Length: 491
Ligand code: CS2
Image (cartoon, rainbow, N blue to C red; front, side, top):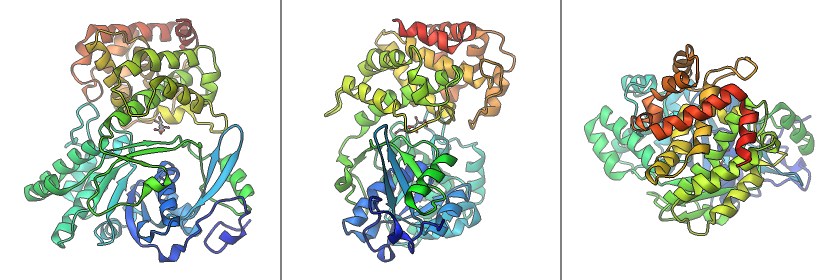
């Protein structure tokens, strides 16, 4: 089978969407750090629609900060790849043309810095996952002892971390008399624009106080709320989608029909009219972001840990098992929704039902293991902020505590049958160390509450929280996840 590429584009079946614009005339207005599946199904798809509407300023140079695999798959395809937009009823294929250059940062850090410092580059966007910001999730501060931060301060011309690249590019622009680009965070961090900004300002200060002052004064980091469920591509997806295209695509991206992007309209050097493709520009993203992180991602993580422990491979499988849908409805309706400020146009009950329907999408096969990754970086904004608000209101936290307890069980690195779990977390070594000798629920919880970068120092000192977590954990250790959830479902 021939490869998908610019030359073969015309051979796609008529039903497959494709870039209806001259890709050779695109300029590179956006440099994206972290060109993984999420970016390709989300921001790149919105940008593709802007390019199709005739604004050629916003081609995307996509960089991987670690592995060459995306470049290796997409460069022979001229950056083209297919989105497979699926649900139970149908699959729609669309080839995206917005990515025009692919870079692998570790191979040539200077090439990436050069393009980030080019006059045409107006936006540097990021999807580097929570851990990519080298910060403490509990406080949002740059982790100044992070190995990549130490490396990048010592070798500023050859950085490894996202903050290291962005700050060096800003320094070069300033030295060349060019204005700063806008730094656009598209990760699920709390107050994501402010968090990015805080990390960058501190990193810049550590490099040079004057640069720190300039970044603090001039850099724009709009807040965004990003939403689209994008499971990792499986081998079967590659084969099935290539067959449907009639051309081989080495890295297509399966996703759901739903997509949402709410963006603070605060760009230094202009921005694409992403609203033409359905994005919403607002002056205050915070309430949207809070609702999404707590409702969607909080439920996702809870389902992922409990579902994995109960032996379910995907989120849809998990929701089909007894008690899980009731648990997640109760979590959102009774414990999360009351903590949310009003969001224009959003009814929490309807939003919760819509999320349950999205989680049930049988065509996605979103693995619980995938969502379970990096729990230490996700728990604070997904569950623990909600816990704090509930405790302040004197309200119950039983389901939230069950989610935290499930993470603790998972973090031991053994499933309920004693089989090892492939635990992926930047703090995996610490998790193993802390959980190794914990003989019972109290000891296990106590060992993990000691992680202040996750729990802060307030929650471990709050008996209503620790008591609820230990109670849930005892049930999980004694009866297992399936029985514990079935019992919760009866409430
Ligand atoms: C998921 C998210 O992997 C995870 O942690 O919760 O990637 C989730 O699918 C997206 O945030 C949905 O917008």
